[in-house]
Length: 628
Image (cartoon, rainbow, N blue to C red; front, side, top):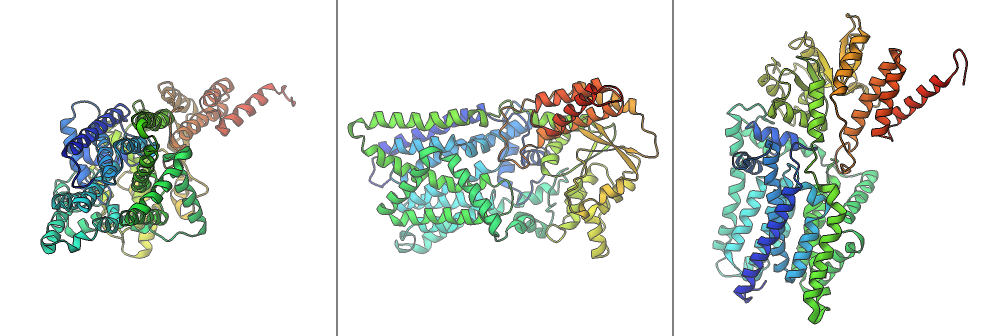
């Protein structure tokens, strides 16, 4: 938008952006998850609600906003109240995106249409209705783009300072904002260097950059309050730098080999097609070509940002990469707005009608396509599943967990909601990872967390690399179970995985001669071999747990972009099938058949239950002493 544009048009844009943001805020709050969800939701909620520190880089800005939400939002669980920050940022980012498109010279109809399509796309909508840090990242990115484009078009120093402040605050949230650094500088244009008063201008641009990094000092303050959850335990400047620079995750950055590159390119293509479905996939390409012909000085930085983000994602070895592509989709949606604007020019006198129809189509198609997938307003099944894990454990037991998908929701339900405080959750992977990753994270934060829960976990460092390797491969876990935690009942949410390398099976090789592994609801009970197994009591314990356990309705659950997308369904089905097998061992075929049927009715594609039911029926149909 040029400097000569009438003031009335600017005011109109402000009202449209406000209405757009308000509309999406209502939508996102309506579909917001009321409790903990998959991914990092449980860990982030636990850190904020207990006054602690989130995983690297700590996200101090989001944590600060989350703490404010806990005080200001009057209803809902802590996870819902913190999630309101995510919903608000997602809606505000779309309002800022609308202003970005207007600065690119797109009409109000085209800008609105692109914002609506982006806001209703699966990945964007999904990330706006759960506790996550990505929508705040997108809001600050859009504000930065809007600021530099306003500066490019008008030379307004205030716009340049606002863009600089947005980048600075983004550094206090998600470090990948640096991927846009070169593009933002190029978008400022030549006037950044050639207009009069260059030194003053550069000083005004650089000064706000200190604000965001200073927020990391809050981590020092919060850690010294000795909270329950202080990932990285940044109590010194050295540990603070280690945490704020996300050194722990830098090992995930590696050049891709052929197979990985092929898979990631295919996945990126699938995500792009999901965001811009059907023929809409062509419009960002058309818009890029049109903008290139009009202004290469704007197009080149935008395309550079897409390339840099794409290359980074190809090298970053994590599964949950979908939200990392959202900054690239922001640029693609802006280019789509350029194409829509050109298309509306051909409508002539019917432009108003054409714009309305276009907006209705861009809203209606993704809304119908993604509502069921993105409506998390009834998604309590992660919390309920986690509650079952805790409630099915024996009184006073140690509950072994493994991995983020398993452990993070348990932290929230156990530490924030206060379910089963007598049970001690103990993450096997984090205990071993404390020693395996000591060079990347020397803080021993997880052991300090255990100490906060009353476990006298020793913090003495291994005397030799050999001992450290042993502790990393379940040695320290076994030390805890045979020392400080000796005598407490032992349960687990997982069983041995025969496909794991041998060094990951140390715990189960240690447990095999000492314990019988028995199903206990959705958990596994480690029953000492020194005590006789009372099969009738084991069956009764399982019956009591399953009688009060309702299998969740997962028919509307969309988990394709999650880590272990079938984890919840598989866990319930496997646990219940194990109970059925136990009934068979106890010579109770009718009870076993009823259990297998319950599993098959709920999860028809769960092969172990299907095969067990078929084998049991075949056995029952066989005549005594013969074959059918």
